[in-house]
Every structure is written in structure tokens, then in C-alpha cells.
Length: 322
Image (cartoon, rainbow, N blue to C red):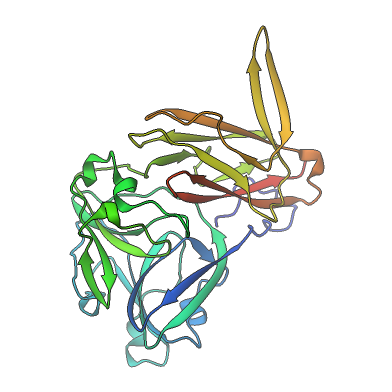
């Protein structure tokens, strides 16, 4: 995760962000996976050492549409946009051009045997950037136990009407026949067709201040807002909660308007709106850092936000000591 641009030069480097572990159950053959975390060790030579993973491919979108490939073995990795990793002892290692594994990025991994890969790192919040009139190689941020269906995620998105989604099965890409009957699999990558431009982020659209990837309580910033918009055609609610081990002391800021505005601060652990959000409705959650309780030069934490359809995102939090 990027360092704090306002970091004071007389202090040590930024505090490490709070980490989680993502587990990927890989099968022998090709696997399409989606990383939600930025691994603490990003070098694929290190990540895949001692594992049965012998190839990793990924695609970085350019301005031209992506050519859809039915068989992963025929992926034109040498063409613009594709990057490939192989072990250093392979003859073709001289041509590899994938040198770091990143968060919010899909990968094709080839395994010689079934294997459970566990990666520890920092979750990174980032909005989906759609390539217009093209297939998009992507994944989703979804609850592992109760995720939304593909139809629920894309409901209300004109650019995805008709929903052309492909998933990898037995090393072959297959089209999802009934998106309303298929739940999104956390950690899995898909090909999704987008007709024209789109800024669709799913039923729950999240807006964060600043560059929009975290909550950063700089020395001059005591309060920040998270904006949640219901982009679904139905009422929607959500829960925002502090992840265990969160090192940033936060309070929930609430305003009650009667004859005068009364602002209250309550230690934050979790929050859900009293009423569901109607379609198109926005809801803001305001959080304040309890600066006097920040004892280190910089502290970090993690929030989790989940809607009632099963979309789930992590938001990193930082706070500086005065």
C-alpha cells in the first residue's frame, strides 16, 4: 500500500497496515484466482517457491478490447497487456515479465497438483475500472459464506444487461448459463463482458475521502466520512465494523437535530443504519479518531463493510499522533 504523502520526514517509515490471510484452494491444472490483498512478500519467486505452481499469468488492461481465450494454455502472454511468471530454473524464465503479485488483480495459476495457497497481506480498497466494449478479467469482494449471485451484483447495470460471464472449470472457460442461480465465489476470477462505459461497483457503492482508497487521519484531520450508496433496485442495508486488532481508536459521530444540533461521540465497534437505504439513497457514516489515545507516531487498523446481499469490502485506516 502506498506510503502517506504527508508523512513527517523526522519520523520512521509508515506503520505497517493491518494484515489478513487469504486462502486459495488450487486444483491441478489451470486456476483463475483473484487477490484481494497485497501480499507482504510480492515477489512471485518467493510466493510460489516450494509450491506446485509452475506458471502465473495476468492481464493489465490497455485501451484496446481484450481477446477472449477459451483455453488458458493458449493465452497469448507475449502480447501487449499480458504478463507471465515461471520458475527461475525454467528455460523460458529469461522472458518472464511478471515480477510482483498485487492486490485487486486476477491471475491464472497453473498447478501440477492440488494445493492450498495461503497469502498474508494488506487488503486494498479500489473501485473496479471497466474496459468498455470488452471482456474484463476481474474478481469480486464477496462474503465467503453468503455471497450474492452474479445477477444480484449486476442488477441495475445497463452495461451488463444480458450478463456474459465466464468461469474456469477443468481448465476450460465456460459461460454461466443462469447468473441468478450462481453465487459469486470469493477469490475466483471471471471474464465479464461490459457493453460501453460503466462505473458499476455492485449493489453497494462506497465512497472514501481523498484519493478514495482508505481513511487517513492526518495530523490536521480529526473526522472523516464513508459514503454508501444503494445502487440496487431494492432496499439495502449494510454493517460497518472494526476488524479484530484494529489499532486506531475511533468514535462514531452522530448529529441529532431538534431545536439545536447535538453532536455525540460514541466509541466505535460496529454500525448499521436504522432504516434500509432505498434505491439511489446515500448514507454517510462519520468517524472521528480519538487522538489522545494514539500513542505511537502512527497507528493502523482495518474496517469491514458488508451489505445484506453479501458484498464485502475491507477499508484500511491510518492515524498520526499529534
